[in-house]
Amino acid sequence: MGATASSKQAAPERMLRADAIDWTQVTAHLDQSGWAPLGRLLSVQACRDLAGLYDRDGLFRSTVIMARHGFGKGEYKYFAYPLPELIAALRPALYAGLAPAANAWNETMGIAARYPAAHADYIRQCHKAGQARPTPLLLRYREGDYNCLHQDIYGEHVFPLQVVILLSEPGRDFEGGEFVLTEQRPRMQSRAEVVPLRQGEAAVFAVHHRPVRGTRGSYRVNLRHGVSRVRAGQRHTLGIIFHDAM
Image (cartoon, rainbow, N blue to C red; front, side, top):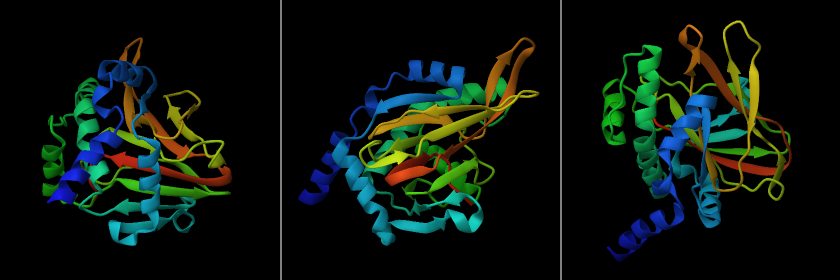
């Protein structure tokens, strides 16, 4: 009993500011750019602890070797249920702040899906549709590794926003390995943007598409994300996807 209570107390202490995010500002940045900084969410020790989980195979449901699938070079692992306590706390806390923005985007784009206020209710919807495999993932990149531009869509139910948290420190733990977003607007060349992150910092970004206001109303633009080649060292990242997979 005592150990369980203390571990439950530890998780919020390592989540530095998840409850203090200015969601109005985040939403404005998302509407403008398709992504938004969330600031430093995790302590240095929390980042190290999460990165240290990578070799504990019993925590994961699957491992993906990117080169085998043409995804890039490197590895990532999907966590199994039950999720580690810190991730299990972060996922619903972030979802609650993002659900209003996701609903507003769908309304603007004419998409019928709406998202309940609580993440547990949304996950129940996913599971009823056969999407019952957890999607939070831990990624590891070593020298020469990279992640091709892609979208994380795993079934009919797709929450339109996801979060990335950098667990390593650029310039100390690794060189290169920038997080990159690209946006393709109709009849225009793709636009690329590097999202700057330090250890423990997070960003939220569009999974698939987002609305952009034009002279004739709003239209959809497609986004993809990836990671540039790591030139030296080792880079760990936590990805938080809010819908589960088939």
